[in-house]
View 1 (cartoon, rainbow, N blue to C red):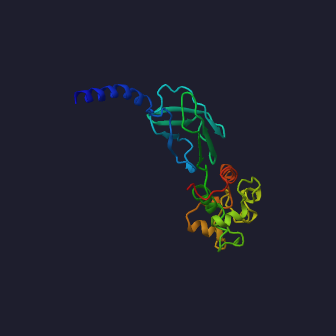
View 2: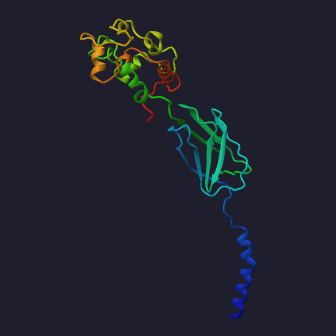
View 3: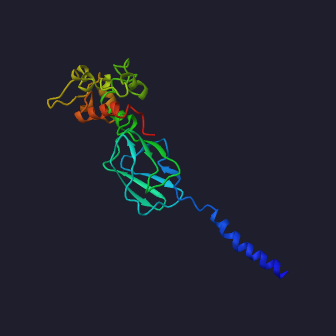
Length: 242
């Protein structure tokens, strides 16, 4: 019995180191497990960072990071445990789709390359920015009860008849739309140049009924023209940011 015990102990001393050497240790490479915003998500605010999360803490000694980002944007980064936080400097572009590629590198060994895509918010939307402007200046004529009922501008769908997303030549931003219409100019004006209410002016009645200043009739300020232009060209005439 004693001989058997000695033999088993000897075998353990001989075989254990060999078994231990053949057992793989933990994989030092990092695996990407998630991101904020999620891959392919839209409506990232332009001042917010992108956060990539990995399955284990990142090396605290990480000093350099090679990232391929399109459209090209300067990035700063910081590490918080297992998260890599990418901060644009300056901010992201509005209404832009970004593609980020991160390859395995000496200071950031990855199990596989990362390809990640997200889209930023539009600067202007129909619901938030364009609809109130049209309602104040145009809808008094361009709606079912107005004198320009054949060319309505009282819904998103109606407006899109005069808009081609991305096209700076869209009808809605041509001068004959962005300046006061002759119809509005013929409305009776007071000595100070402001519109005076008349009983036979449906657009004046509309504005009075809705509490809209009469001097807004048919008139866009230069900065408002640029809002609509940017909405069409840059933001591709989106209805909302959702």
